[in-house]
Image (cartoon, rainbow, N blue to C red; front, side, top):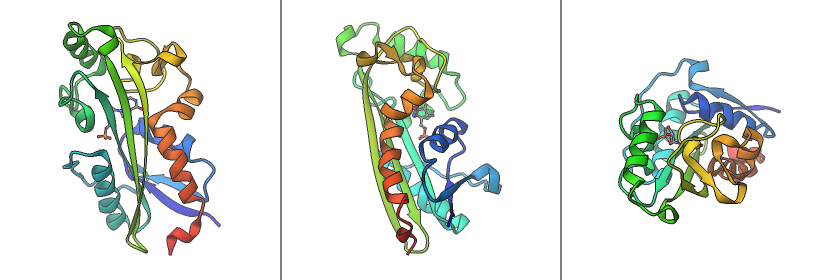
Length: 202
Ligand code: IMP
């Protein structure tokens, strides 16, 4: 038996990654674009978990099917108030990433290299309208910010997110490797455990 799960995001990069990450579950993943659901949902909270739960609940109520939402972002320790849950909005939603990298490089130029620490964080929330329950999983990955972008894979801030263990930025690692180590990969692995049990549908 296959069930339907709405992945409630308009971010095509997240859709591509999540389809790969959640391929072995008894749910067919559909997107907002595929069902023509166009509602603007705010991200009003200061934690990824609260924003993800909010998005999942609003979309599940609108679509009347289980909804999964991702709230994620880049936390740069030397710029504590600027990215994080506001990563998509940093410099303005429509600002191209190369311009954002430049802004970050200007801010970090005065910071010693070893203090350019950062992490990606991902919260996934699953809202089941049949039961009213919300399931939450989270994942993170530690790294350093480099001032020169490198690599062609991934999306968003990946070209400046360097992982010392791999001697590479996330944009230099293939999607298969990113899936195994990334914040979204870790959160999705835990969510897949929950989604493998259709009893959650009530
Ligand atoms: P939101 O979850 O829609 O608020 O947006 C998350 C934002 O964080 C994205 O638009 C990216 O700027 C950034 N982000 C989250 N995950 C990743 C990732 O895996 N790679 C690169 N950037 C990411």
